[in-house]
Length: 44
Image 1 (cartoon, rainbow, N blue to C red):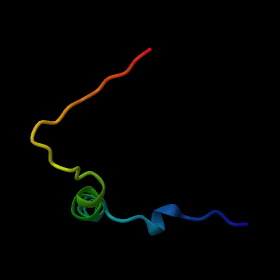
Image 2: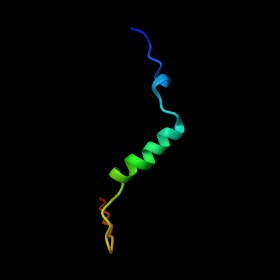
Image 3: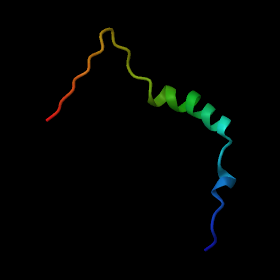
Image 4: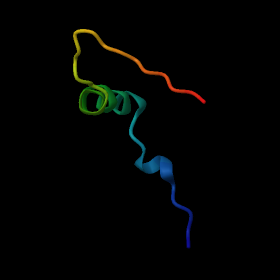
C-alpha cells in the first residue's frame, strides 16, 4: 500500500477559515438566546 499525500487534499487556510466561520459556527455554536442566562456548576 502506498502512502497518501494528505496535503494534496487539504484546503488552503483561508478557505478552511471561511467554511468554519460561515457554515460551521452558525449551525453548531449558535445557542438559543436567553434574557437571563444561568450557569450551574456541579463538582464533587
